[in-house]
Length: 298
Image (cartoon, rainbow, N blue to C red; front, top):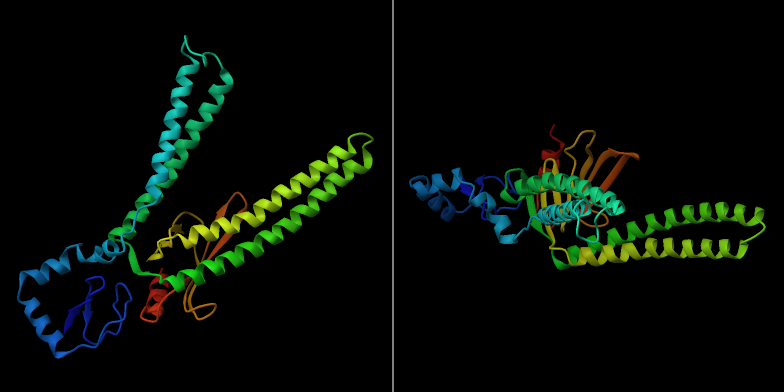
């Protein structure tokens, strides 16, 4: 016998404890469920629920997920358009920017940057759309206030510790480089020393200030979790590992620092191999082992 998951509308067998689509724990199958199931099998409504995408998207409509990647695309295209207008003005007589070729070079950079960013985030927006529609969705849930607070505090602690390490290394390098100049030049030692102090203060403000801003951003996040095979949306941040030289490196259910899902993926850029670690809280009614098994499939 079969029934319908009330969370996502997917078919669930009578002996399934968790929904194979969204991973939500299912209530015990009763005689009432059996009667309802038999009624649906004899109606067109049953067929429409299974075949359409309406119920597949139900969870995301309920959570009101927004495609936040599209906003960056629009802003980037506006920047590129402004750059194009400025280029046109520098070659048009009768305006203050005519033949100001420094503006031309800056505007060319604006156009190229805007178009490249729009292209990248346009691709991300399409991927995000498949999560929202349910096309590539494995599981979805929403963090409670307590779960989001735990998630945010762990990120804040990790980011703060990482920035502190980078700050120490950078400070030592600055002191060594400026110290050599101060020791071996005859003039301007005071100015060099003040420049060194100012640079250290600036970098320190950035190192300690960014985790605070990042924490505030995460506290204001929507708390929505969408997990796909090649990308995920976590509390307002989109992650993807579907491009060349990137993949999931490790995925497992965890109990520390909280009950949830641990996902580590890697990618390559100009600094060679980089890894991102996601620790995502989840309630006890989420079948994490099922999600892990789906993500481990190649």
